[in-house]
Image 1 (cartoon, rainbow, N blue to C red):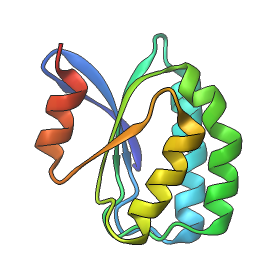
Image 2 (image 1 turned 90 degrees about the vertical axis):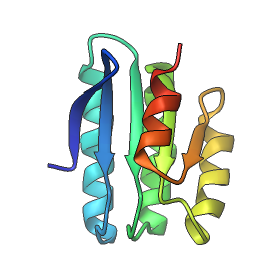
Image 3 (image 1 turned 180 degrees about the vertical axis):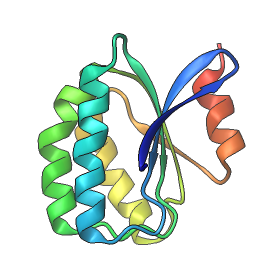
Image 4 (image 1 turned 135 degrees about the vertical axis):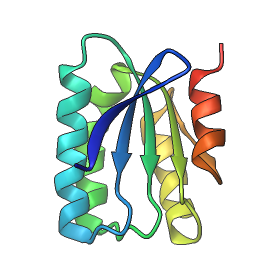
Length: 118
């Protein structure tokens, strides 16, 4: 399941797993992600795993529509696997998602530490 909840240091973290997904599956996962954020009883901490994912123009368009609502319900965001072209896409995302930018990390452990720090 690409979108799931995990516990870390007593905090609930929404884990969005795009690992190795193709373009269509990434868009489907984005919609699942948006639904999980909307359904959450409180603002969320989000960890996105983008390693090996294939993000398309359709994904960017769908993210632009979904992110205003997600941003209002998000405390912090972290991403792993944002290298190369995905790093450029992250810069674009952070412009549209302000004031809750997605912070890149190399490892899941670093990302989780950031999300759950006091």
